Length: 314
Image (tube, rainbow, N blue to C red; front, side, top):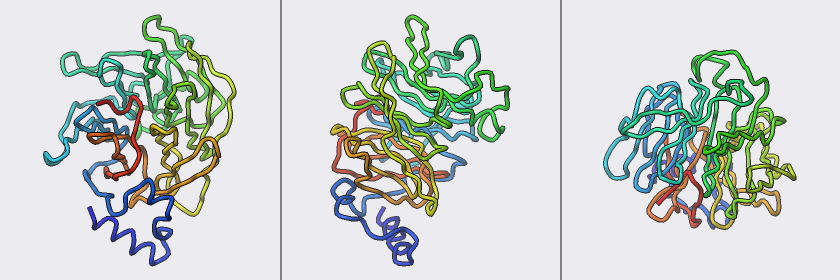
């Protein structure tokens, strides 16, 4: 929608949006391609592309929606959703959801509805799973900060049984859950590198991006900070995380989206969004489009990159 880009250009001229796209930004994001594709929600999150449609959550609305490009407004996929947040797909194409309300990771199908995948760690109930990805061998990785415990707006007020914010790997066949990290203050979005040997996790509290080497069992090593994206002059936080086929990391950040080169530990491109971005997912026929949830809205931008990851399947 060209009007969105014209609005951003006007803000930039007023010194608000941070100026026009730099050359490196234009090399990734196609100018004047950002468009509003859905609006009127309370707090959008969890975008995931099922091959032809976009799945996303309205957390306080307790509903999961589905948007089919070219077919009008989004429709309700299912409700209630236990205040679902992040989504992804398992290797059979079934929808997995990280739920604030129930404090579980669940699987949803049209035939069977919601079914629990993992709800506890060391016999203690999880807090409020936030986002989830699946490795090609079926290993489920998810984050579990306490956001959904703090207020009924975001979840259901419950006792924090775990006592820390966690990053986990779950083997569904055996039921074994492995703690990857309990030191991040607010682990949020996560994504795997193209070779699936590195897990990237965003920490919303410290505005930082972290990396872990992950072995076949889901055990981690070499915990390290990739980038600090703190910028108190712009709204927004480190939240959703995705990776492209070249291994570049796309993360919501203050002002919109940041593209991070993990080898350099540096931001190499930015995209300003009209509203605070909360999450993102690859979509479109060739996975070259990014869908961005942003408070009440969902946007789409065309890129020159190609997406990968279990949040997008073809």
